[in-house]
Structure formats: C-alpha cells, structure tokens
Length: 311
Image 1 (tube, helix red, strand yellow):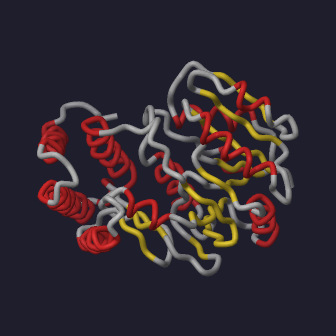
Image 2: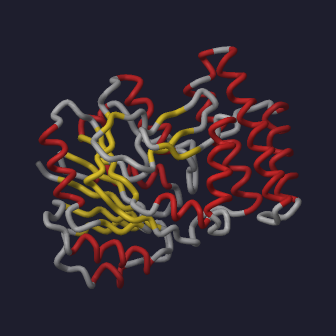
C-alpha cells in the first residue's frame, strides 16, 4: 500500500522545514510528498530534502480547501494523508498508519493524536491551565467546542468535541486536519471550496459527510502521533477571525444539522449564548479587548438578519 502526503503551505518556510525533517527520519517513507505552495515560494527550503520524494506545486490561490483538493488530484497513493505545515511527526507515523489500514480493511479514514493538544490549547488562553479547565466545562454545558477523552463528535449546535486523550483505537464521527483516507473516499467527496482562505472547520464538514454515509468507517489510532506547534502566521486574527468562526460555523450547521429541525435550532442558539458568555468572561479577565465582544454580537445579528448565504 502506497501513502501520499499532501501539505498545503502558506509563508511558513521554517515550519515546513521542521515538518520535512520529521519525515526524513520516518521508519517508512511515503511514496510522495505533495507540497502545495500558496505563498512566496519555498523552493530553497525544499531543495535541501533531495532524499525525499517531494513534488512541489506553486499555485496562485490562497485557499486551504482548494489546496487539499489540488493535492488529491495530483496524488497517486492508495492512501492520502493531510498534514498542516506546522506539525511534527513521530518517526513511526507513516508506518503505524499503514499498519492501521492493514488491520482495518473496512476503514475509510483514520487520524492520529496530537500529543500536545491540551498544552497547545491552554496557550490560547494565556497558558493558564485553570482557565482552560473552566472554559472546557462551560463549553460542554453550552454545546460548544470542547475536548473529551472518548472520541471526535459533532454536536447538533454545529460545534464539536475533540478526543484529546485516547488510549486505544476508537471509532469517531469526524477527522481533524491530520486525517488519512483511502483513495476511494475522493470518488464521492471533496473539500468544500466555498470555505475560503484559512477555511475554519473544513475538516469537520468533509469527514462528517463520510460518517453519515458509512458509520464506523472513521477512527482514531493513538499509535499515530504528532505534535502541533501552532504557527502564528497564516491564521486570521481579531475581527477577521471572529467573522470566520461565526459564519463558517453557521455554514457547517446549516449544511449538516439544520434539516433536523427544532432541536437543532435550539442547540445552535444555545451554543451561541454560551459563546457570548465565554467572550464576555474573556473580556472581563483581560484576555481580549472590549471590541472583541462587539464583533461577536455584530456577527450574530448579521446571521439573524442575513438575506443571502454567508459563505
């Protein structure tokens, strides 16, 4: 079985080098590494890895979903894995992925675990574990994004639960941006290119539709491990991030859960109330400036009064 790895990258040359260094020492190399460069060029950085089967493609768009679809079109492996350019693989990452697909012939996709997931998300709230713990519990109450031990789930609110501590192979409902899929998946599914740019939530929208078609086809394997060193560049911030978070979450909810009716509506707006509470608390604790709350209120008002699709 041959593995293709697709890496979209946008102006993160140092992070890309670090990732490629972790691929060089893999116990089993992929048959190809497809780098979709959407930025200012990474040719010099890639040249130093002549021992790797790299195929570099320079494109003239900046869209994570388009880059992933483009990489799939150029790939030739039986299994296609996606990596963010700011991750670092453990040296048996590819080998364990192959072992998984050999052991689970009915599986359509798998993701590994991000070993520093909780540490990385605690940094987003100033590195304070107690704030992260508090947020996680509020998030569970209000059907917001939260980390759990069991498995990846999507909630009727359009938010998700992410399995941060997995001790054995478990089925799940969606795969994150480090998902690995059999080629046959892409005969029927592709990443939604209406989600432009950074494309928040594109992994959930893509993989959950696979789960809806064939449950018990997606898994998490804790032996497939990596680190995620969240790069500062290439991510939306401030007002842009708030707008993308709220509009893209609505788009996902509208496509996947709105057809379920009243309970889905109640779950969605209950989560929005919780989101505003969390934002208000973050402003009170000086985690964000006061206009951070106003940006959220304005976007939710826009959703209520919108007259056209948000995405």
